[in-house]
Structures are given as structure tokens and as C-alpha cells.
Length: 285
Ligand code: F3S
Image (cartoon, rainbow, N blue to C red; front, side, top):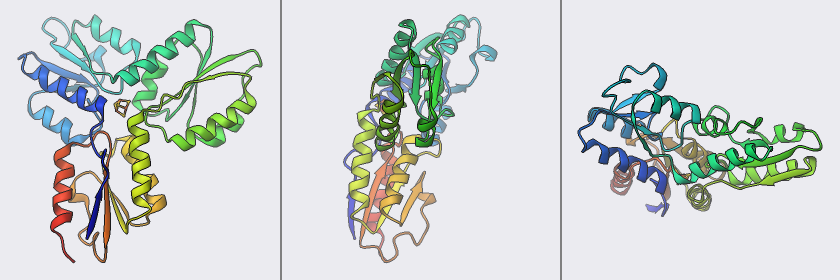
């Protein structure tokens, strides 16, 4: 069986940095919390919890708050300005593990609001990254997730719009949405904030999926970039499996398969990829 492993499968720069920051903080001996899961991978979050890291979802009601609150690490995909302020007000030492590419979007929307612009975020309104971005501006925020919504989008002729994207948004869909908006909105400043790590993984996944019999996408259920890799692969390879760990792979997944492609989302740790790779290498049907 021929195996093609996507060269960029697994941790991106921002996720690696954030996870390392948490492990580094563990050495300080302080009480460590993360605001929301540090990354969208249950295995990593579980491992950190086993080392005493607490996941806090609401700083305002956190039981750890007050004197000796310890350290709060802001998750890789960012938190709202209000949440960050609430965390500081509760007395936590704040370690900001927001990916620098996400932080850049916070700055863009903040400045857009200060300049009197309205903000369009192309992304999933239910995703924590998008919620956080929206929380960094006082401007009216419009969130567009689907191409159909772009056609219906209207603002006053005089409105100035700054448009950004969720870092993990599908590039092709983003381009379609922007093309439609540019026809209907007069003053629109488009900043393509889709992260290069996402583009690279999506392009690789598409290329590999078109040339294999079976595709395995490894990623957390809550990881939007992993899910998008799955969608892209499924479009190009009917036999695509989306798994969180090796246990999720159906026993007969490789039956009759000559070539198999493997990719993994930006929040998938190396050890899980290696486990799947090892299994595929040693399986014979
Ligand atoms: Fe950052 Fe891009 Fe990863 S935005 S967290 S490097 S996918």
C-alpha cells in the first residue's frame, strides 16, 4: 500500500506556540488555568488537565479568582476584550497565548471601529475565534458564513466596511463571498486574514485526496480547520474518514485500498499522527 502523508499535517505555528506556553507555565508551580480549551484537541486538553491545568469558561464566576488566583492562559484562538479585562480584574496573572495571526485581526477590527467603519467577519458565528474577534471592536459587526448570505447583504451607500476572515475559513468560499460583496458594497476594504497554515493544509489535502483510494483526516471534533480538511477531502475522495484518534478508524477502512492519504488539522498532536501512520504501515488486507 502506498501512503502519502501531507507534509504539513499537524500542529501549526500558533498552536505549537500556545501548547508550549502552557507546558512552560507548569514549571512555575503556580495554579494554571486556560480560558477555554487552549486548542481544539481533546487529547491535549485531557493531558494538560491530568497535570493540574483547569479549563475556565467564565472568568467572572471563576472559583479560582481573587488572591492567589494563579495564571490564566488565553487560548490560541483568542478571547474577547471584555473577557480579557474581566480576567485581569479578577487578579489573574495573564499569559496571552493568542496566535499572533489572530491577534492581528483583533487589531484590524479595533482600528476599523476607531476609523468609523463597520466590520464584516467572514466566518462561523458560533466559533470562539469569531466571537472573540467581534468583541474587539465597538463598530457594528456583520458575520457572513454562507455565499447565499453575501447576496442578501446590504448596507447604506456611505458605509465604509472593513472585511476580515476567520483564520481557518475555506479560501475558495471566502473568495466567492468577497466577489459578491464587492459588487454590492461601495466602500469595502478586504483584508484576507485566512492563515497561511490553513491554506497550505487545504491545498495539500485537495491534491492528495484527488490521487488516493482512501483518505484519513485526523483532528478534534471541535476543530473547525480539521472539519474543513475533511470536507475538502470528501469532495475529492469518497472514501474519506474523519477520526480523532486511531480508535475511530473503522476496522475495514483500508480493505482493498492501494493508496492512502493522511492529513491532520492544525491542532492535532504529532503522536496521534504517528500512531495512525504506524497502523497504516503495518496493516495488510
Ligand atoms: Fe495561528 Fe494559523 Fe494556527 S492563525 S493558530 S498559525 S492556523
